[in-house]
Amino acid sequence: MAEVINMPRLSDTMEEGTVAKWLKKVGDKIEEGDILAEIETDKATMEFESFHEGTLLHIGIAEGDGAPVDSLLAIIGEDGEDISSLLAGGTAPAATEEASAVEAVAESAPAATPAAAPAAIPEGVEIVKMPRLSDTMEEGTVASWLKKVGDTVEEGDILAEIETDKATMEFESFYSGTLLHIGIQEGESAPVDEVLAVIGPEGTDVNAVLSAPAGAPAAESAPVVEKAPAATPATQEATIQAAPSQNGRILASPLAKKIASDKGINLADVAGSGDHGRIVKRDVENYQPSAKPAPAAEKVEAPVATAPIVPIPVVVGEESQEEVKNSSMRKAITKHLGASKFSAPHFYLTIEVDMDNAKASRAQINNLPDTKVSFNDMVLKACAMALKKHPQVNTTWTDEATIYKHHIHMGVAVAVDEGLVVPVIKFADQLSLTQLGASVKDLAGRARSKKIKPDEMEGSTFTVSNLGMFGILEFTSIINKPNSAILSVGAIVEKPVVKNGEIVVGSTMKVTLACDHRTVDGAVGAQFLQTLRAYLENPVTMLA
Image 1: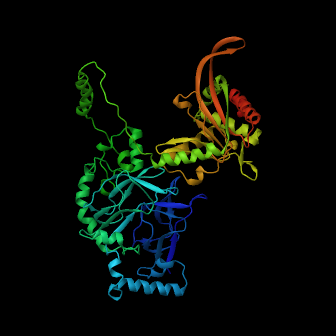
Image 2 (image 1 turned 60 degrees about the vertical axis):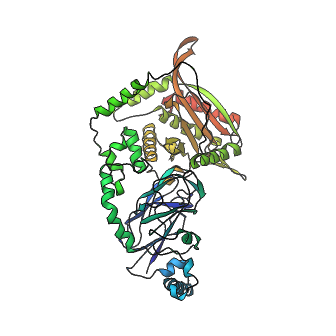
Image 3 (image 1 turned 135 degrees about the horizontal axis):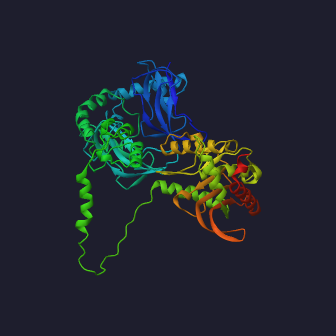
């Protein structure tokens, strides 16, 4: 009996998911516990295991495509089993299954329905639509096309780079054939499910395809598999040299790009071992740089050669400007932050904290074996303890009531390449300084490598944002809904201070509390900051 696998709900807020990668293909044998696919939400990419055994008979959502929770993801059953009724209606009754079978026979016999035949999509032709690459994506922008009309496309080739509200992502082809039509030009935006491209046999009448009504796609037939090996040698040759594509772009996974950037590795020097020459994580990690004195010399000599080219000491120029379209990601950030800023009446309270004792205490703690504590860890601990004494700050506003949270889940703002994420340390008040530090390091590292789980970024009751490591002295943050407050932490600076009536050199740090005035009044926020300062200026009280 065939089993229908639906798009899983991988978090309590997930409404849609995107298939980042299929690890099995139609016809493969599946064992219980096998990883079927990697499912991507707006928060993380997670492996999805099979709970059934059999043969993978159908894939309902192609790689890179998004679909709502409970949409048909795949069908697993016995080899050769008839699944036409499941494709037509899933759990339809027997009468519906019989009707679906009749429809399937009618589709397979065009001679019996001559009137509908001209409108059908020819076999082997695939209409590629704008994919839903995140659960909040409503439209996408084609940042660049890596193929042009007339090019031969193999399954797995990168067709285009598509910009969503979250990031710019590579979009792979799931079909082989010729690129017959491009429906959305570079720089243009279109809603999800708009026609992005048409792929099929060379010489196909594209106008007839575009005018045909939407119908069931052609079966995943052998020609797709047979064509792939024919183009593989050329692709492998490009892989060995890590050659860029037509527009000079190097194929590499996002994680490989991130690791290369962190390590200062030029991807042009790395040979890719992934599909179609793509550079993957292992290629960057195993890369061994070689000395290249000549290029270095060229880089040094180039500015020297151009420096003397200054014609006359007269300011001559032409006014110019460039219009750059707002990315989908920036639009989403604007929408989210605007909703928080303009729905919650913010006010801000700033204090300056004497950090001399904190510096001395941290030095003593870090002298202990296998112990490492940061100032940020001390701030998090102090906040958690202060929230216990001021529960009004640990609340959420609703139109009906104010919800007091008796648990303390600390959100920590972490900057990533695509923007900003907020991992959550659960029950932060129950953790020691060293445990807090280890938790922050683990969560932040997995957030930057996109390995963090969705539920690890949910449920915060208070948030801390620290820009002190960037030398920022003082700033304000927008409250992370549904929290009632967020603490902005500045840098520790040495400056003249007055102690015991004398001017001496001291270390101070400014922190700013942004409060939602619907739940936190000025006096409540001020009392919270006084308690926070007492803990930070006397760290021994946090160890009791």
